[in-house]
Length: 227
Image 1 (cartoon, one colour):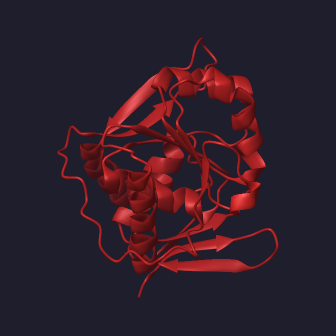
Image 2 (spheres, rainbow, N blue to C red; image 1 turned 60 degrees about the vertical axis):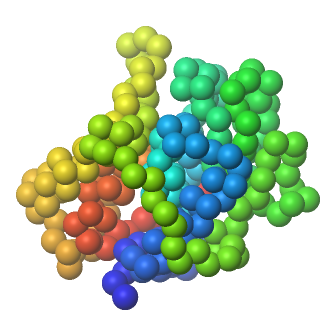
């Protein structure tokens, strides 16, 4: 089983995930989100540091047919409100470290229905929050993926806002072809390479060339846990 992800944590240990692990764990995220009522086309924000759950949940959202909305984990409350309100985001995936920001702005986001905390126990949750332990959840070997097409929306990125209000840029599933080819031909990434993309997935480079491109090429990724 080929290694897809090597995640080195600041504690010094490394977690290793095979491509089969990625498949099963992303299925689990898709099942949990579907159980919350998330539908194809719904916006699901990923607001966490560079931990395995960020990369793997991204694929789970796409499998469900929902739209992944990665946001930079260093954002403060005002930046979150601007982007979540504009996207009318219904669900956010986060960690205990960042849950407080969402709790403080929750009343200003009427479309936000669910906050999923990936490293919390039930006694650490507030109203409207659920816990999802990727490693402790039941194994999900199969999932009936959403059948979209090349123009089906997949990822919603936002600009930095340096020249005005942040603007949403909606990507589609067909963009994987250009991401795959540019990763393979421009970055010259081979399936036996070990690759580190230091761009944060809260920005477009960190998803196009830190998730979609390298994994579509079958490479092994290295991630330094920024949590």
